[in-house]
Amino acid sequence: MTSPLRIGVLASGEGTTLQAILDACGAAEIPARVVLVISNNGGSGALRRAREAGAAAVHLSSKTHPQPGGLDAAIADTLASHEVEVVMLAGYMKKLEPVVLSRYRGRILNTHPALLPKFGGHGMYGLHVHEAVVGAGESESGPSLHLVDAEYDTGRVLAQAKVPVLADDTAHTLAARVQERERGLVVEVLGQIARGELRLGE
Image (cartoon, rainbow, N blue to C red; front, top):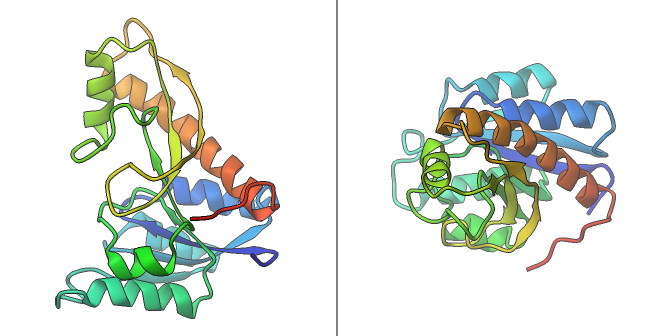
């Protein structure tokens, strides 16, 4: 890993987690630079935020690369061309494919809005997760930050933060509290990686 650490972010939506990372890098809370943001949504807020921050902003999707395997190779090549060392998925709504997973094995991070291994797996994303947590009568939830592998939410968990589930919580109120803590957890863990306090491996 170099100093400052070179981070690439994959995002699909507005980019609020990306903004938290950009702000923390700018404040030297994370000794790193976001050098590249890739989005499968050409009109995403994440790409706008990347441009405003001076990071490379690239739209790559099945529209730009309709051939089988084409998008996978394009993402991997774009990450490599920007010398990305750690890949952060920040609300990226596409499953990564073999080339990216192989080339960046042990260096791709993602968050999940529940305490894995509970409430993970296929179909467990967004409000579905919080609805399941509230419906199960759980007393606590919170974000998990984990390594990414070929399956949904099965990679090694690097860190978790607990958030109480209140008696009157709905999926929406719980989601707001978990998301706020999730952004803080991402900043904490990326800071640890950038400072060499947390070593990534396979």
